[in-house]
Length: 237
Image (cartoon, rainbow, N blue to C red; front, top):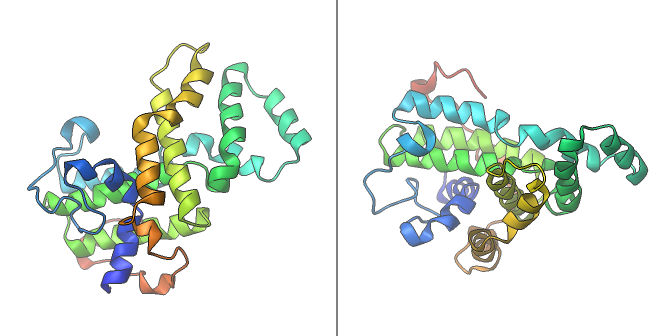
């Protein structure tokens, strides 16, 4: 795979890189942190081996945090306003603040919802896998090429993809709030966190951002890869 298309794959984890630029991350290094030797994922991800990393990636790509919200995001884009209101009224009261959050963000991220939150983090893990010596660059690129297929299916451009990441992170941060009366505030306020604003500025305004120089629409055949023989036992596409 040529460098341009490798960089396109790395751009899928650019939101995670943008969060960590101050700690040595780069947008274009296959191992994300070119000047580091290893990143300990034990506490943050419970990952300490190649098999644990692969298990996490193959599970979270399609069954991560986004899955809980995927149906409402899909419905919001297809129901009339009156039908959406009716749908919300038939949901449990505890879920309605979340549906209001979805209604307020669906235009920004599209019907892909917050899947970019999961996809970007899994791309990040693939690159850390190279850094930690668990994955070869070829193996990492193959996993990222599978992530790319999903990203292109669910999103229309880099802007909606980046928005899906930020909105997903806001949702994830709100999960810490256990008081149901404060849940609406948690959902709406997390997006204003300085770290989220900083990521947006870096991705959508930074001169070195891959989103400023790489097209969203590329020939997907250029990033499709045969599964490496070393991953023959990985039953996942």
